[in-house]
Length: 442
Image (cartoon, rainbow, N blue to C red):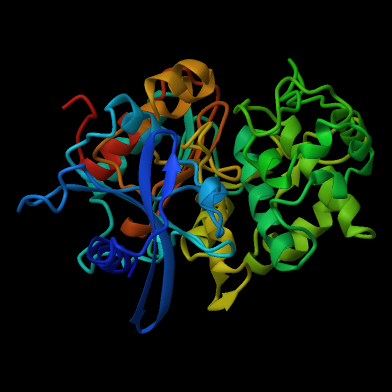
């Protein structure tokens, strides 16, 4: 459906260039337009359109770039659209590029719902030999669990190096993904809105002109500017109130800085918004109990709150069930637990780090500059983000020691890999063995 809408929008935009007051971004003129077409239901998309100077003066077939903005560009204000990379390209070219650029704008309460695309009918589980090869590789890199679910059924599981089916394993930063789902559940329950100031919950931030600007979304995407973490805080973290009192290390929304403090601050804010219910109880009631999984928070903050950025321990099968819940877009046993459109918010990156959404790592291309600026991106995920053979809908929860939960809706796959500390494990090698039956180097 998304592809159909974009294609029709492109035709409509090119056929109705005359509608427009126009918008000048720098020295580049962009035509403003409005598309309306009935496609089973009424669709309205505002858009910006760049046309080459010679467009319409000669008969030619013009290539087109369709730019889909991130969550910050939604609404009815064209100036909000974060199209800076295209703006720079247009400016550097002297507004003389030989192709059309179409930039549709989604309404405030809507998303580019790529996850809704129907998987191909011929998708099947990976061959047994491929799953064994991936598990063998994981074992050699101190792996302890390897579980593969296809279309909701466990088709492979193996435990090595002290791992066991009933053993709750440390998730490390894989714990963060629980916070993202608690957040969108809170939006659904009208406890908060992602783009509201977090000072609505952490009221002492209202007295700080910089912290007062921090939104819930920025905490979840690690772009808040808050001190991201400190050495040793994964196991022995300060109290949530103390974390909220840490100084800013950057400007809200200006940079990506990975660390657990953003998420503990979010949990602190949400708990204060909830009033009588703790964050831990809310997560259990809204997410964990409905899908029947158990999470042990063995690492806690100084005030006994869970260290939500890295303190969870879960069995491999329970983590796989959690991934299946995500693959099914927030439903379980045929019932909605979390609204699918809200869940999809977790998989929207930011300009600061396109490959990280609301606590989930994404298969979104990143630049050399971003890899240089964000060490953990270069170290842990950059090769996956830029791999041209991996499915674009791959998302993952990742933790130290190469704890991994991969969810690939288009392949109907959920994959869990847990283990002890390992510096040699490669996501690309593991996934290539599993999905392609060969080494990533071949």
